[in-house]
Image 1 (spheres, rainbow, N blue to C red):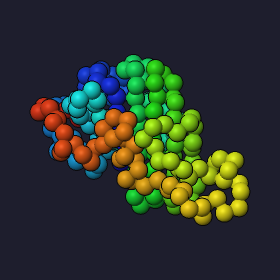
Image 2: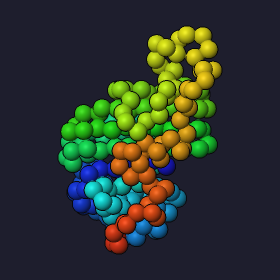
Image 3: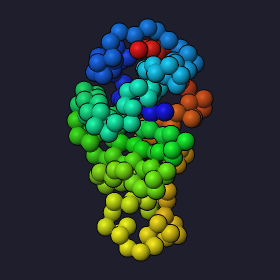
Image 4: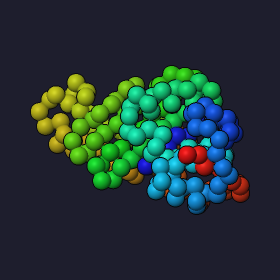
Length: 185
């Protein structure tokens, strides 16, 4: 699954920024189910200062499309983040853009045992000693076998999301507003 987090801007404004068209009101349960199962996109009601836009159909693991959408969202709303994780292929990624400029984008494929992207310096909330097969340090023998090297996992993605905005696995512990989101596609 993948999702964007943006500073609140209203579901209709977010849908317009992503060129998603008109949606229909939808509750959390149905919206998340449709995003997982049917390629839908769910724009959740605001949680604090953040709005989550959930759906793999938004990116389909295309880094160019992720960067384009992330940049556009941050240009319009000030800050936007993207998170992605896929257990089967051990893919884990996150990115952050502020005022139309990507400041961090990290992606890892455990299946391939390599870092796919490591743009920008690590930000607070990311693990120390994060595995980066693209770094000059990784060229030294035994780099991947070093003790203390942090390999990302789904838990890492959720921890970074929680540090930057919202960890969606902890929504039940938050005082989320009652209301409907928007189901698009």
